[in-house]
Each structure stands twice: as C-alpha cells, then as structure tokens.
Length: 434
Image (cartoon, rainbow, N blue to C red; front, side, top):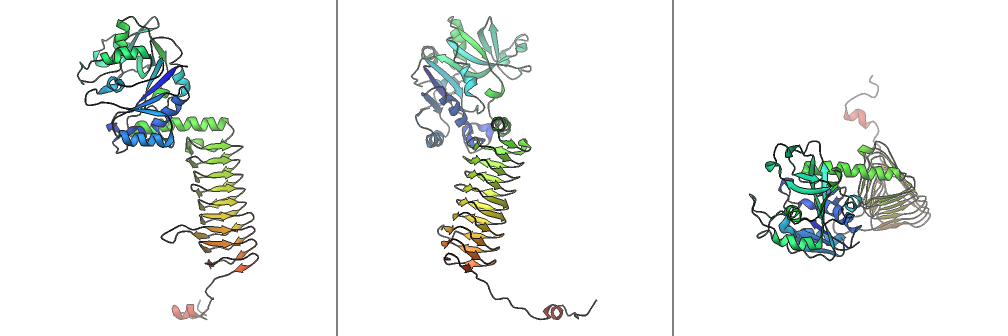
C-alpha cells in the first residue's frame, strides 16, 4: 500500500515531571515512542518523526535503534500545536497516517483498520459510556460531521458517546490543501490538526469514523499513565508467550522485557524479571531471579540468582544468590553464594559456595578460565587473570594467584593453630564448671 506515517513527538510532556523527554520513558524496556515506530514499520517504509523539545536527544536515541527514519523539527515559535507540527512535513505516498509518539499500546492491526477505507480522511473514534473531558464526534449516516470541544457542547451534544482518539489517515492531497490553511484563532493561539475535519466536511469531502479500542489508543501523559500502560503491555507480552508454550507461576508478578525471546518449553516462577534482549531456551528460571541480556539454554537458575549481560549458560545449574556477569558456563554447577564474572567455565566443573572470581584490579577487568571437571572448594578467591586447567582440585578457602596445571591440587591456606584451653583462660572459667 502507498502509505506514509507521521509520528508526532514534539511535546514537552510537563506532566511527566521528569528531565527525560516524555516519549523516551520506557514501557517494557523500550521507549514508548519505539513501540509506535515498531507498529508503523509493519505498514510502510516512509516514516517521519516530528520533534521539538529535546529533539537532538530523541533523534539520537532513534538512530541508535532504527535506520531510515526521517525527522522534521516543528517551528513551535511560529506554529505551535498539532496542526503546526504538520506544517512543512514532506511525505512520499498518497495516504498519510498521523499518530502520536505517546501511544505505546497501539498495534499494527489497530492502525491497519484506519487505512482500509478510501475516504479522504479516516479518523479514529472511541465510544465511551462516560465521555466527560473529551471532544465529541458528531456522526451522521456513517460520516463525521464535526468535532465539538466539550466546553462548546450543548446539553444534547454532551450526551454523545463518540470521542476523538487522535489518530488519522489522510489523503496527501487533502493535507497539502488544508495544513497551509490552518489558523490559530482560538484561546490557545495554536494550530489544531482537528480543524482539518471541519474544513473537509465543509467542502463535501468524506470523513469516515473508524471505531477503535480505548486500550490501544491510550495516551501517556503522566507517571501514573505510564504505570497503567506498562501493566497492559506486560499482560499482552505474557499472554502471548504463555500461548506460545511458556509456563508462568503467578504471571502477574513476572516482568518480561519486550525484547526478550523464548524457545522450547520454559518455566518462569513468581517474581522473575527477564530484562533486555535475553533469550531463554528450554530452561527453568526460579523465583525472584533476574536475567538481563543473557542467553540461558537447557539450564535452571535460582531462586534469587542474577545473570547479568553478555552471559551464556548452557546445561548449567545456578543456585540461590549466585551472580554471573559476562561469563560463559557450559555444563557447570554453582549451587549458591558465588560471584562469577568475566569467566569461561567448562563442563563437569563444580563451583563451591562463596567462590569469587576477582576480575577487577581497580584499573581493568581480567579473565578467569576454568577447564573441565574442576572442583573449586568453598570460599575460594580466583585472582584474575588466571587459568585452571582440566581435572583440578582447589582446596576450600584458597586464594589462587597462579595458573594451575591439569590434574593438580591447589591449596593456599594459613596453617591452622590451636591454643589449648584458651576458652577457659579467656573467660576465666574452669573447664569442669557446670
């Protein structure tokens, strides 16, 4: 289809009460604007984002994640308002879909409904049993007659349940005719995009209402709206993955990033967080564990474990209170209370409780390499860079500062001493006292 998309993202978003631009606040791990871009990319290859407030910051964020997005900076000083945002925007195709960057719940399917009709303007309309606070949309015989702001509504008009959802599909020739003709003769002295509806109706053009779901066209204007939107988005993500075969215990307590993916039969227990572009394959993530930008395959993790970015776990058991960072573990057991950072650990190796790879010397990070069938005793410190070859035993409580060759035992301990009857002398008690 010959379609262009314009996403309006120029607003300051003062109600967010934040130094972060409104459209960069995240929903399920991605800026809300990115969700609108994702939906638009399924429909066309000509997307323009209109910016003003923090334009350079937003553009940089978009260009980090997307290619071939065009940008237009609104001349707010001369042309404020949603209509002003469209002044000077150049599009390639015969139809132009205009949506808002603060609508993170909009879907490609919902947008598709707006581009099917060949009307001059298709506008999104929501039916609300309580439309208070919204502009009403007067409809007659399947055509929009006008949009009436609530303050201008007569008593009968206030009974209208149809309200404007703020997304439009407009023929390019209609925009080219009406956008330059917009005036700012209103209390706010702004140029309103909605004014093109009245212009079109007055000239006998077709303006069709398209009924849409309120949830999908929900705007985000405050931190409260953000929380509500993320709850809806999380529900969608989890429902989709459960339908794909992922099991979830108390799914309402689980968080899954929009970029995360699953493969095979996976189990997520309550309180689990799957962050970033993590990929979970046929694995069991136990209660209150956090997986971030990591790959987990045929493994179990937790409870209460943390797998940090750039980690790859295969056929591995990670127990409670184990933290893994930027490490590759294959066929490893690390039952509890360990930190494994910047490490490569091979099959059959057992990591005891309290083991630490000391990977940072205050200036740089260094690697720990552990081979196959290594037993690392509890409370061992491995001072990187260090290599432990296959079939090695490391005694509990050791501090390993040198490489250990295959088949050896490494032990580093202060010799144990005992002082006879010291307890009784210290507390001035008799060893025969009751």
